[in-house]
Length: 463
Image (tube, rainbow, N blue to C red; front, side):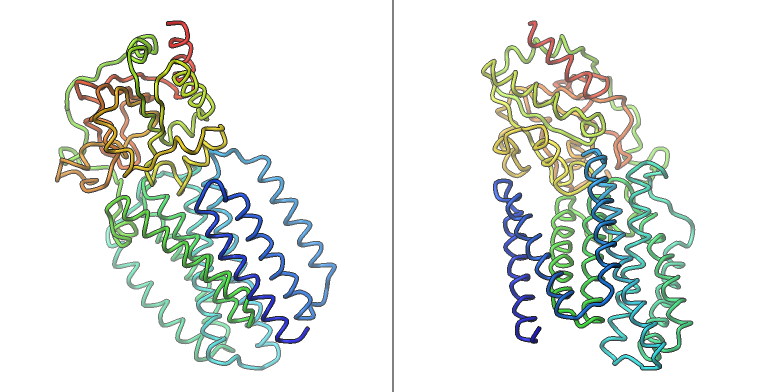
């Protein structure tokens, strides 16, 4: 295949990637966008295999078959609520794949006794470093999301100092590998330190910040792939990795803005650590909550003309999205306007709530973003909060001593009536108590989200 044809095919792939990404921004075009981006990836893969004269087709076909089988099995078996964990593992897989390819290329150079040029050596360093961090960082994120290890930030005395020392060591190793690539000891040391650094960077990050971590690790995996593209001199991999890295960084910035925090504060702020006794947000006496039953709530709903439902991760864990859609349909049948308020960091992954509700066939037009729905709350009759905590905490708006002060929230407390479905009074991921629960217009309905919503459906139907 001539170089002109090769580069033209990669250019077509890049155009398809960009069109696909653009179409993913709308629910109406997302499915088609996914297909177009997949077509671009298919062209890039075919071009590489044919154009580069790759040998050993039996291994390639075997690898594709095995990978496809694992992917299909995971897609069919993994619950929608576990998608954040699956995305974390996929990010780690992308990172380690890039690092392994870059490492294999370095070993190939070493076996030939041929030193790579400066750009390739630098790319090998970056791919190994970023890929290693992405792998172990993603595994820690997976363990936290799956609640197989504590979701709270894990800190220890002198942590920042230790990280700084390791950072200096990493810089030294990067310089050694880039300047003397055929001396493999520094390379193996760099790979090992990168794996350790991934663990150390993610353990101090709490569960409340997992949406940001997921998008950041996604960006890392793209950057590692981009670096590997330079190692292999593969234009398609450079373009694809750059697009993933850039889009992940943009999404990370959006998520940080949604929490009114900097990326540095997310990475090193240990947000969500258990507050000391007596400190702001420790959850002292704030009043008395009013416990109600679904039958009590049905009375309020029967006299309402509008309802805004606020879904949170508690709804996702209980897999209550179908019950919630049934409730929304019933309210609409009774002439009650029903919409869903979506906070940018609701759930544990960017867009998590939108996907869950779409899976339950909730009309996408009813999903209203925070900035657009907030002005509607003062005129709204009933706000129904299901398993959400931090994103509806008025302390973020009024209490300067609160750890979440300044974070944009959904103004549910400004509705005429507020129902909160919650298992207990335990605080959310941020570890701070929510004064919304003690407001005069707030009624708590304790219980599992799915069972409580279904009981509410029956109560409204029978009223």
